[in-house]
Length: 147
Image (tube, rainbow, N blue to C red):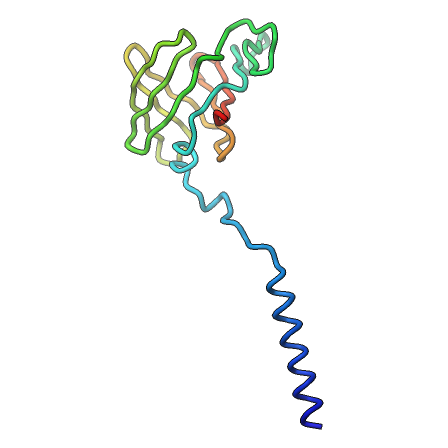
């Protein structure tokens, strides 16, 4: 009887071991990744740009896959650095250096560079997308990592 119980327990433990070893590894949930890490992990390009966002004359002026864009953002790219600075190539191809910060709850992105300063509400910030809107200019940008 002892041999039968020992065999039964051995099979049970072996089955548990096999079951556990076949489980997929868990990844760190995105909520554990800081906003700082998400913002500074990529060089961003524009996927789309809207003017007059939320108004009756809202207009899509640029789409990455668009063929008849009203404005050209194909050269624009921006990289945010952990030290609070950023580099941006503007639509005209000129490189600007500036500073950035977030408000206390990381819901707003504050930027400043020569001839420009602004505050944008962050609607979405993940490892694969930055969506922002400027309440003063009513512009909205959807930015994705440069491939």
